[in-house]
Length: 240
Ligand code: PGA
Image 1 (spheres, helix red, strand yellow):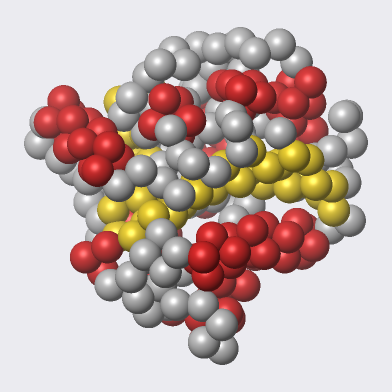
Image 2 (cartoon, rainbow, N blue to C red):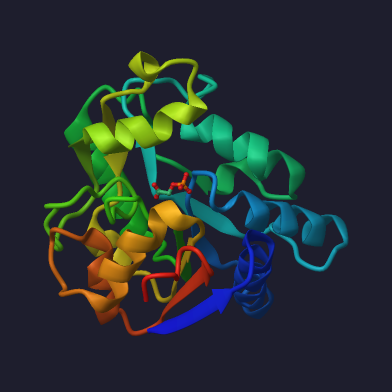
């Protein structure tokens, strides 16, 4: 496991961008696992700029997102489909057919999870970007999720609903369930890039990196990944 500690959110984003850029330059049809949330926004801006400058291209890149709220359509402004369009996809030269995210309004949970697992088997991620929840979750894999889990539906924890409510008009609008790649799907990625900033992530980061490998802290499994890099700002790294 590699740990990079940076002075600021901007520097964290730049370092993450360098890692992502290398993957894209080495393989122009790479499969990139992406994440939503506020942490990756700086990185996404840098990817947009690099694409505008023709430094990189998404023309043949495939993206596979981690998760999506259940029960909402992709046109819903709170969906992760919408988030990804607004914060990355509509500004880069990606082919819309190469974008994969779970269907929040799928008719059958089992069929949707099966479809996504088959997709991940067919297109294993060359790199998977992750944020970390203040409870140590990765994707929407909450504490207690089995390490051998595949794509599944989760009941979101109260703390996650509260954390995510900042992006909604009111907390009651936050969906209570979501589809998420399982921990096994995430661990299958060839390379993992996990980014975190801010004091509210320090405890989770400390447990993930220094604590025991336990299903109580989903991110702790990353200690076993052969190619995992944590890029942190000083606050997120403050308890290491
Ligand atoms: P955040 O979410 O980037 O919005 O902090 C990270 C996560 O919950 O995985």
